[in-house]
Amino acid sequence: MRIALFATCIVDAMYPRVALATVRVLERLGHEVVFPPGQGCCSQMHVNSGYMDDALPVVRNHVHAFSAADYDVAVAPSGSCVASLGHQQPMVARAGGDEELARQAEAVAANTYELSQLLTDVLGVTDAAAQLGSWFPHTVTYHPSCHGMRLLRLGDRQRDLIASVADLELVDLPDAEECCGFGGTFSFKVPEVSAAMAEEKIDNIVATGAQLCTGGDASCLLHLGGAMARRDAGVTTVHFAEILASTRGNPLEVSGPVELSIPSAKGRRAVPSSRPSATSVPSATRGGAR
Image (tube, rainbow, N blue to C red):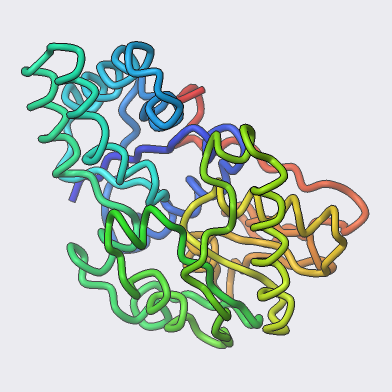
C-alpha cells in the first residue's frame, strides 16, 4: 500500500523523530510511505482562535497538497490534526463560500487516519510485539488526548497497541480521561488554568510510578513534558509511535530519567543525560511543513 504521511506542524518542527518512527513502523509492515510536498498546517490553531478568514488559505493548501498526491491512504501521528480535517476544514471552506473546496476537504479527511486507526482498522495490527517486533522494557502509563478520545472516538486503539509491546509494563493512569490543559491556544490565553490542569495530570502520572507517560498527540506530550521538566518530576513523555518503532535490535534509548532518542537506522545511539538530545530531521519530513 502507498501511504501518504501528514507530518503535522508540531511533529515536523519539534518532534521529527515521531515522523521517523511512523515511517519505520509502516515500512516494517511492507508499505511505501510518501510525503506530499507543500503540506503545512491543518488550520486547527486558526479555527480554534476564531480566525476563520485566515484559516481558509491554510485549508486550501492542505486540501490541494493531498488531492494532488498519489497514495492509497494518508496517516498522521496526531489525533487532534486528523480530527480537525473532518471536523473543521469543510466548515471553514463552506464559511468562505467555497463548496467545491468543502467537498474536496471531506474526501481528503475521509481517507486520512490517525496512526492507531490505520494500524488496527486498516492494516490489521493487533499485536505490536508479534507483528512489528516492538520491544520497550519500561514501565509506562498512557494519557488519551481529548480530540482522539472525543472526536475521533479512538477508544482503546492506542492503549491496546501499547499494551501489546514486548516487555512493556502498562499501568493505568487515574482520571485518564481528564484534559491535560494544553488545548492549543487555550494554554496561551489562560496559562494559569492550563498550568493548573497540567499539574493535576502530572500528580496522577507520578502516582502511577511509571517511568514514562505516552500518548498520541505531540502537543499534549510537549505540554506535559515541559511541565514535568520544570517540576523535576523524574518522568517524561514519549509518543506511542516511538514505542512501536523500538525493537530489540534498534531500541528507543532511555538515558537517565528524562532523555529520549530514537537511534539511527545503523544502530543504537545513546544520548548523554547531561546534554539535550539532537535528532536530525527524517527524510520523510525534510523540506516539508513549517
